[in-house]
Image (cartoon, rainbow, N blue to C red; front, side, top):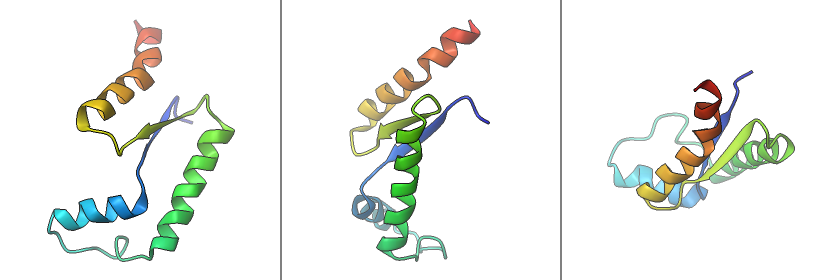
Length: 83
């Protein structure tokens, strides 16, 4: 088991908008329905709630700098443990 699993959480519709803005064609996975992705998101968030010692949820809807700060806060205990 990993020491920590990071979940970069983002509203599904916003995620689709970001993918579309890149102008790339969708692969088979990205062609799935919104319902499919909502179920996957719910499963990851449920796991994070059940095992908060193993998961950190990063709010990926924030600015790049804010996401980076959340990431640093999440991994800081691991970095201090190895120092």
